Length: 181
Image (tube, rainbow, N blue to C red; front, side, top):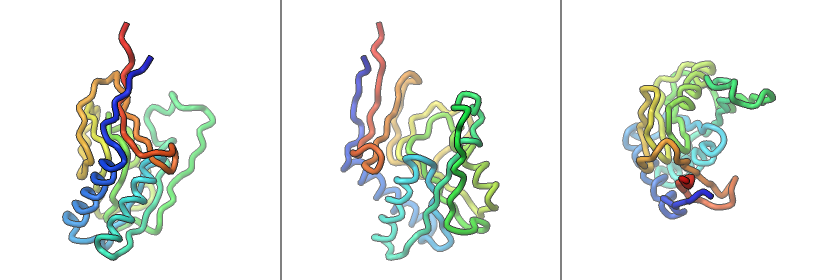
């Protein structure tokens, strides 16, 4: 039986996203020429929330896009053979723009590498920045986030599960551990 510990509740997630929104505004001196792109699935909802927070803080809307990186993964042989490519739903041309890539959990870096490939196939951004709700370590690629909600040291055997209301009915982040025999 798996054991679970909640490490971020709804309020903690909201505070982390508010802080990330402020950091994005500060680093980019506003959001002119910025696009926020969420990595499917939960990164899309986090990206939308970041855009809403930025608009409430700055009074300026930020275009939001979605990225399905399924067919860009280097472990595709482990995925279902009938994987359906949703592709990129970008709010316009990303060439010359600052793209803020959003994901729920940063682990090995392979998802982000795939997302970078997918973005570059859609244009040449001026800059790509990475925002993640949770950085759990264990990188296999030289990828580091620009904006982090929470750094959480984990064991490789643990699972970091992000839940968002839009998909799961509640907002929280939990660590699941398998019971050792």
